[in-house]
Image (cartoon, rainbow, N blue to C red; front, side, top):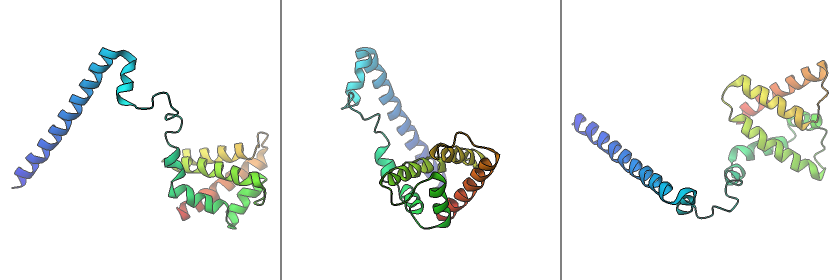
Length: 158
């Protein structure tokens, strides 16, 4: 019986592979027949802005992003320190847009798997967001500390 199930599994995989191969061959033949215009057969809105807006819906409907936005706007000590570092007051109208951009970028940084790379990405993000191009040694140490506590807090809430 177990051998029978295993054989069925392989047959399904072979069928799926055969179907994918046939689709790829058809696409290749369309490319040979129509040149670059073959894309019109597969994409309805070729000339639209679909490429530029590819991930907008995914980003804007992300529960991870919502959690980060709520955190950055909260009265948590780390969130307050981040806003102070960035030189923003929560009542300023432009601050909400800057915090939104920071939240989107933090979400992207959070997807980085390697801890050291994530730490460097968040540090660079904070340095750029804070317009701190002329960091001295003390500011750099403060920035590393702020980055570490921010990542620790995000790990805690996410």
